[in-house]
Amino acid sequence: MSGQGAKSTRSQKAAVSQKGWRFGAVLGVFLVVMAALVWRLVDLQVVDHEFLRQQGDVRTIRVEKIDAHRGVITDRHGEPLAVSAPVQTIWANPSQTDPDEPRLANLARLMGTSEARLRQRLRDYSGREFIYLRRKVQPDLARRIMDLDINGVYSRQEYRRYYPAGEVTAHVVGFTNIDEQGQEGMELSYNEWLSGKPGSKRVLKDNRGRVIKDLALIQDAERGHDLELSIDLRLQYLAYRELKAMVSAQNARGGTLVMLDVDTGEVLAMVNQGSYNPNDRSQLDPANLRNKAITDLFEPGSTMKPITMAAALESGKYSVGDVVDTNPGYRRFGRFTIRDHRNYGVLSLTDIIVKSSNVGISKIATELGGDTIRDLYSRVGLGEPTGVGFPGEAVGVLPAPPKWHPVDEATLSYGYGMSLNALQLAQAYMVLANGGIKYPLSLLKVDKKPKGHRVLSEHVTAEIRKMLHGVVERGTGTRADPGLYSAGGKTGTVHLVGNQGYENNQYKGIFAGMAPMDNPRIVTVVAVDAPQSGEYYGGEVAAPVFARVMSDALRLLNVKPELEVSGSHSGSRPTGERG
Image (tube, rainbow, N blue to C red; front, side):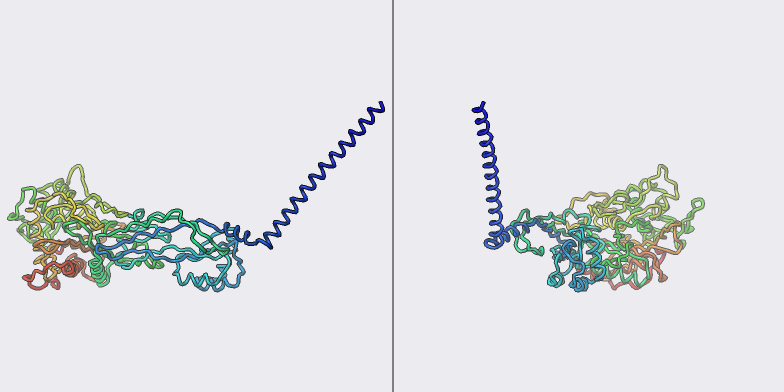
């Protein structure tokens, strides 16, 4: 038994000794590790402190967005209409910025804002890491701000859109928002084409968030595509000048002018009154944003009479030598009465257009039928989109009743009971001017002549052009005479439509025409809304604008003057029914 007890005692001592060795080993390892950690801390802080600096640099490597440069919009000759210039945006990290920082007073002064408001914003957004302080400032101002060296205040490059022609091209070009996204006009229609694609890069920043070095390009930004419009800035300027002068002189509510190249369908000028300056929208009136030449509808009135006359000649029921008895100067349709300015008696087809006889054209319409007139209206582009792709385009109304009543046929023949926009009216006259070919309209420059399709014969359109020339020579449109160039066209005067129907004392004066008549180059439509200075007929308020614009436009286009034309009748008053 004693031997077993001794053996047990030795086993217990051995176990205790083994536990003590293990404890000592663990303690020794722990002390060695602690000593190593202490030494490494001393080494990093005192001996090899460059390592911590390198690690700090690694932690300031960031990925930054590279904004894409938006494409340039130009006129047909390369003149810039919309460009993007580099600017700086000032932003802050409120979690890094002390709202009580004294230099914030200078920052507020440079940014043109309230110091109290700036400090309060930093307090309100103290939990955020990003807020804008001032978007898109000039680089020199950004440098002055950054020289203040305020902790948490940074800058980054962006682009700002600028419109060199200002209000002259505003309705066509449109504008972008602060993020360079199209909001109106061609900027909106071709936003994706113009925008491009942003890129990204890896940069090294200091502890103040300033870029020290570009380290690597991750993806290069893709520049937006340029856009070349059909607009001729020279013609745009003169059209804008003349329309604005007339609207001002007549104290009118507004006005519109559209000019087309008759052989390509390109829009050479498109202006409206009132307008706005896209470079300064602080006082912008939303009513002036609309491109009224495309978005606003109106009844075209007597400017439709030549189209109706073309339908008559095309039908074979009438020839140029025919006459129509307009006695006694009016026609009754139940409770409706159609009147001429006076009783013209028997009129030739030409004089029906020259004198703008409602009775004469309505009698022709009764003979033709509403479907015949409507069919030609449709073929020349009325009642359907123009295809220019402009946002907010209004198509208009071209009636198609199951059964035509005589009064509906009569009013349709001289442009009532239907609606269109100014661009559609210009397209219809383009067909008359170029010999009967309907070309697709375009707000973009056309490199080669587009493929059109014939909608009227050359013979019919040639006869209608002679009638339109008579309107300017001796009819309701004598004020449309451009002087050294022969012109033709048609006046129109219609009641404006208000909330309660037709407004008795509010009119739209219209003139649609072409020049020169031996080989028309351009078609122009002018409309003046609600003139208030006494004159309101199309031959009085719209025709003079047409005359001045066409005279200068043809000269700028190097069209040879027709020197045999003796003087200008633009100062004389129109005769007969004033359209």
